[in-house]
Image 1 (cartoon, helix red, strand yellow):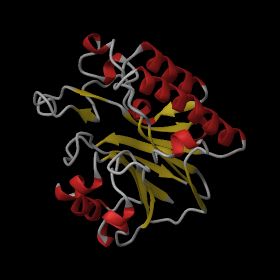
Image 2 (cartoon, one colour):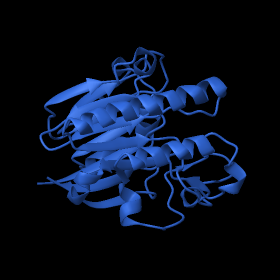
Image 3 (cartoon, rainbow, N blue to C red):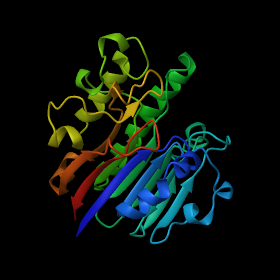
Image 4 (spheres, one colour):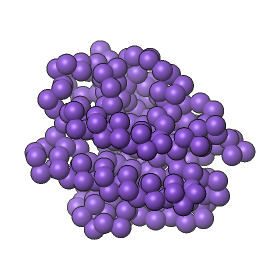
Length: 257
């Protein structure tokens, strides 16, 4: 069976709807859709968005209204769905949905942004480490993992337009990039880089300022990773940079299980 998966930081699901999100969802008909930064509570949403036709929907909003949060639309009902990592200071921000299917487990995650201050940068790095412990535990138990979402870090210099100018900013700090190296060393594969090694100019986020998207001054900070033994099941990976509606664009993979 072939499945199409897509991930998108919508930067506010209600704003995305005003920009054509539901028409896009209906036209594309992906099997599994992971959303990040929904910035909404389920009781604030219309039924068409809360439970789109043909999908089972799962929502993990942050306790703080208008902030963070994740959602999952899926045409194939998972065996089990869990919200969070089991750590209250992370789980209150609604950053993680874990959906277990027969052949794989999907982790849809909105990783913290560390740009605000040192406290949030530490929060981000602590989240990274707790997530990796959680993922490694599942992998050791024999589960195949698909990990997607907004990591809020560009891994290498080809993953952003202006690497030298951004070396001192969260999102491209040496410690963040070193953690990405560590993550990969634990047996996880960046699917886009697997299919598009060395390709430049492919980004998933652009600032709203200085016409950054129009000029393609962007960052690749959204990813699909899989554990290395599941890589044979991934048939393609793409970045859908033509899709508007957020300061991020969707990205996708095709798998066969």
